[in-house]
Length: 155
Image (cartoon, rainbow, N blue to C red; front, side):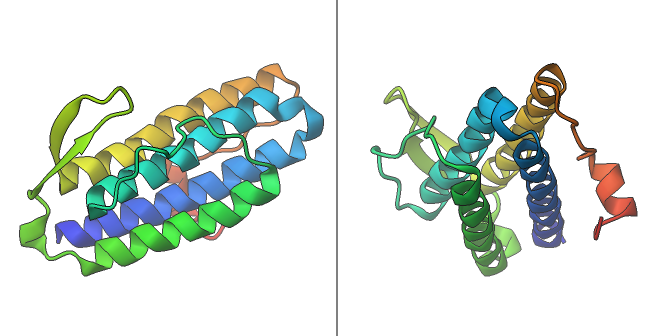
């Protein structure tokens, strides 16, 4: 049941990220700050995936600079990585603790389910910031709320 929940959450997250990236792209040259935040969403997804799978590498940048085209490619790649990982999980693995170091080198342990929750919530948080930045930069933000997704998953 919980694995299905996370599958749906990551489907939503991918949908919302696609819509946010489309809005950033439509803003053209007035998208600098919004694109920077979107790159951070992608980087965090990669970092957390490597932590969750035990392949963490300290050299991964948390604030990289990608083009919109690179973001589009990475968005699909990282979603597929998460999809495969979630599909490989049995329910009894969700509370399993994962040891890792944060970007400051501090040691932590988090459960797989907490990591999965964090990845989706982190993206939601920054997409809200992206919407504000797009509006401030003259762009048009899009609806990326979960309830909007449940009403229009193909929109």
